[in-house]
Length: 117
Image (cartoon, rainbow, N blue to C red; front, top):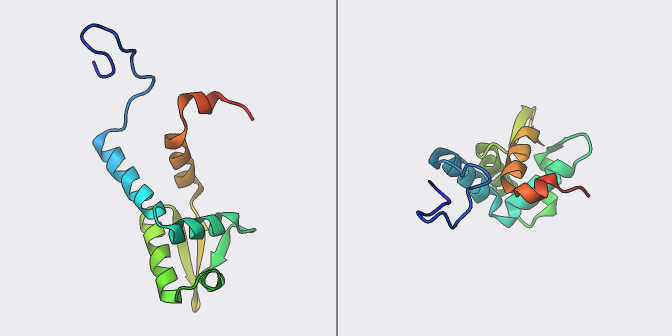
């Protein structure tokens, strides 16, 4: 059994480890978050009052072109962290709360999940 050797010296796992498919899916999300620009973009979108932001409002915060910002946003969208909608000339983005909740659940240890602030 995983987590216990033949002599029984190791305790059992507290929870099932990630399966191969789930690990691959999460790796895509973490790869998307592994870039400082994308991490800042996600933070900016998540912090926005009203829950959504136009790409035209995100671009001035960076020394990057609007197409470069759009590329980073596309990668966040492909990772399932944000979604968007075109309204006329501009594209508006919002965070997908369920995706962040799933990510947070993976990051929590069993001890942290039961802790209170």
